[in-house]
Amino acid sequence: MDLGLKDRVALVTAASRGLGRAVAEGLAREGAAIVMCSRSQEAIERAAQEIHHITGTPVLAVQADVTREQDISRLVTLALDRFQRVDILVCNAGGPPSGPFLNFSTDDWRRAIELNLLSTIMLCRAVVPRMKEHRWGRIINITSVAAKQPIDGLILSNAVRPGVHGFAKSLARELAPYNITVNCVCPGYTRTERVVELAQKMAASEGISVEDIYRRWESLIPMKRLAEPREFSDLVVFLASERASYITGASIQVDGGFIAGIF
Ligand code: NAD
View (tube, rainbow, N blue to C red):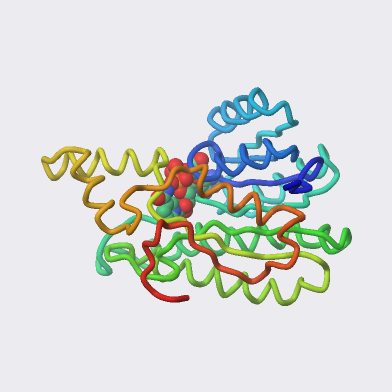
């Protein structure tokens, strides 16, 4: 299948590692030019060089924190200076901390909203005007299975992520006449650096092996294994492509069957 991604320009945020990195590489493998950011200049440049080395496509690395509006505006300006357009926007960021309700202050809530909801809104506001001019665009938000099925201990994520889905649904309906699609993709347990570190931390604090932690997570997943980042990024790449032209306002999980509900 020709995905029609050659020479498209994709902006992927929070991409120095994990899911964002996998998505940037997946799009680059299909011939898209990439603009990628993370908070650390050194980390994003390293990831960009690796992707350029693997795929040969142009990759621009930008240091930017997606919670800062001035960083987003600089990021988009640099992308437009270099490539003249942004056809595909993949909104990603780190996840909020875990813990019980009473552990979090109003400022913690504000930070979670800024990190996972407001960043998406600000990124869309920065790229949508050009997409409308070109009458073509793809916006994909990386959220979490927690948006569809709350996960105990992740109250910040459980509360804030569904807001991204509400925003995306509204935006999808408004932008559909311009040939701009807006979708959300919900990762389940996926073997990224963050998840490996989390398994190690939990194992150390509970005095059990890392394998025991993985076994505990795997017992919750009908497929009995974690996803590899590539299994997640393949869906995002498809949604970013010409071939996904009639899919908009959708929220799709990549979770090995973890979500038990029908929708
Ligand atoms: P990760 O920690 O491996 O990677 C996160 C990336 O985001 C890094 O490149 C980091 O530098 C960057 N980043 C963090 N905050 C940023 C900010 N404010 N501005 C710019 N860059 C920022 O995480 P991951 O596992 O790839 O997860 C990505 C997203 O998916 C997170 O929101 C996470 O909560 C969510 N998620 C992941 C899983 C999973 O199993 N991996 C499951 C459900 C949801």
